Amino acid sequence: MAGDILGRELRLVSFGESHGEVVGAVIEGVPAGLPLIESDVQELLDLRRPGQSRYTTARSESDRVRIISGVFRGRTTGAPVTMIVRNEDVISSYYEEFRRRPRPGHADYVAALKYGGYNDYRGGGRFSGRITISMCMGGAVAEKLLRRLGVEVIAYSLEIGGVRASNFDLEGAREYRYRNPLRAPDERSYREMARIVEEARREGDSVGGVVEAIALNVPPGLGEPVFDTIEGDVAKAMFSIPAVKGVEFGSGFRAARMRGSEHNDPLVIRDGRVAYAKNDHGGVIGGITTGEPVVVRVAFKPTSSIAKPQRTVDLEEMREVEIRVKGRHDPSIVPRAVVVVESMLAFVLADHAIRAGVIPKVLR
Image 1: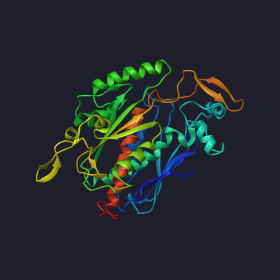
Image 2: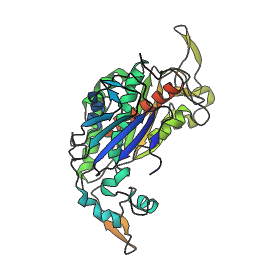
Image 3: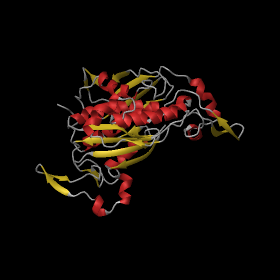
Image 4: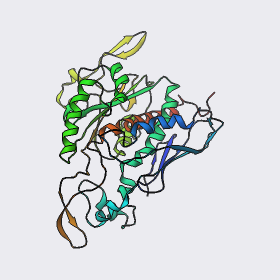
């Protein structure tokens, strides 16, 4: 398959399938000298791992990472860093039916069409949410690089099933988001979101939502207009995550309902440097970072695999039929996607920081 590489100077090569032997990543362009051990990566993989609560799939995977190249004596060598995670808890028999009767909302039909039926359809193959393991691997490396600049990326479930968090502060969200299974930014929104997700789960249905990610202390000047803008590259990275249907920055689509006098962010002097009085631009103007927090929101559709009967077609008999999707699936993909969104934003920023020379090729 083409299209498995993200980035220019820092490159993420994703490989593996949902029910294959392994899922993994090759990360090229990692500066030499970065301290990196498996526990650095494991921390992020554990945050997206399935089977941790009633709100996720019951698929039980340890997701233990192995670094098999590019690290020597605890530091990156400058060579490609290769990591793998083994697939252990697979039940492929559920998916035989979907070769003939593709699931609504999934890539079963279009994937078979594109690849002549040779694609690995088990568990969705390359189109499964399981491939986001490789994104978290890249994110773990990127976040370590960004910490050298003082950059921090914070993501959380802003909205699930129509319940939108409000009146919370970023410091509270930083502390609370990974202490609850839905990755909500505060307890009040968690309780409301939990009620909605549980209701959908009982009914054999699913709900979507919105993940918000904020990158703090991003240096101004990152971005390569006109085709490699920060917004363009971040949006591309986010749309590579399965189930993403929309991406916005700053005020986003709300800007379409504002006047210029309302949307424009006045320039001010703050602590002896140029800054902005507010941040409707979301930290990016003209495709270049301004030094204000980069704010991105990512919309996820409801999980396509649901227990309710759905209409599809039988490709062999060429007639319309009804199916019930069996297997183990998330009633909402949003909570496990939070760390993936965080990883993808970090990866793009790290790539651009290397391109701008802010992060050197050899670390001292």
